[in-house]
Length: 282
Length: 338
Image (cartoon, rainbow over all chains, first blue to last red; front, side):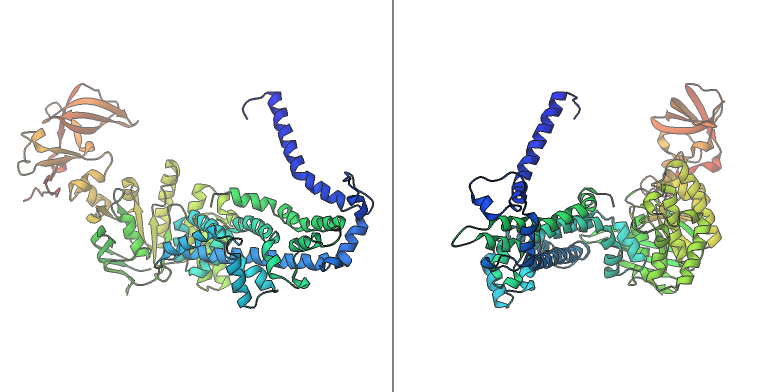
């Protein structure tokens, strides 16, 4: 801002701090809850400071899991989530990069139509097509499998569009120079396009990994065997008790652990992520 | 190295837009040919057709003994230098130079030798491990030329390689390109819109206008005997004065031509000159000045020593042999001998 009035600065900071508090509060409550016993939490007053049972609660979830809800230990579900999120993120990047490559660099009949067909699938997120998708996956015998968890979510119009925009910024002369240098289409893709869209791939990976990790309704629907439960769907199952109270302290401990991998991905790839979204020069 | 022949070459874009038509050029082995013309005259299209980046719709292009119409750019044995350099931004200079050779399966030791040779010729040895973004415009241009040199191709194709450089650097690089070509003796085709660049570089010039060849010849031939008003106006700086003969009546020997051309440097101020000029503006160039004025309602320019006296009205004379006569309808030159 050009103006330099202390009042405005204070106002801006108060607003920002309020925003942080609003976002951080539930996380704090979840963390606090994960350090108490079940009785502390259901007594009516929610404690605001951590209790003494942190190690105990987390160990329970890591070792045995919550047997009453039929969920396996957290480790197993984390691995499942990791497999699903990674397959979705990597699969989406591969497929959308190749389709963007085809759309931008090859002249074939109905090229425009192909692009618009891909684009239109933006209007069909999982939730809208969930029943037919379930039918297809069930018919293919992919219920309770990693393929069933990830394959139906891999096609991505957003990522295709993003890569298309990236490829369009690469100057034609570079393509021509590569042609004269004897690089065929796939060689050009590997030697020129891949390295030039490295940062965009990283940015996309962060977004897509979190998208995959947070998938909730789809895994819930197609997994019935505990060995394929993902962590996010698992939390839902834990909180879903028919008789008695949910074991909130353990649910919250799981929730906190479920948050860690996406946070790690964001922090680890932050620099590339920002570069990929901001950088335009090729 | 090889000769290049363009035989009735033409290019028609879909929708019947003719970009280039009936171009016949024979380029000898080792010759430096410059294609020059205003923007949109088809010179870049023509070069890209030789390179294989544009399809050829009419005629044939031969490189050496081969007809290359259907041959991929990579297999035409040519190397191209682009206007924006087109260096691979993620590769070091060394990798940029080596990429084309690597794709052709050249042995490692041979690549190493050629890259080092090219780096030495172009004095880019100390930049070999840098990325293109860490180089200045002139250095990038050298790398782009290095990428062409390492290939040891039959022909170099230059597509306005100097137009992104500043004026001073352009003059230096121009000379370097000329020396380099003389040293390597590689057949070269060079595209530019800058007539000065064209004059200084070319063994022979090809002046293009509207997709057609106006004239082919050495720079001096084109300067001394332009075949049309277009070439007359395009080659030489400042441009030749082209005046309707009715504006300068009773000029001897011009009866059969309706446009007369005379270069500003061929006009001199004399007491009894046949042309009267009303001075309207003066441009100082240092060693000389350009005087712009009017004669019979037509614009005329002369170059004039900067220490000579000026007046409102000057009388101009010239040597008869420096007069160029043209037909105003076709623009074609009319030979005085006829």
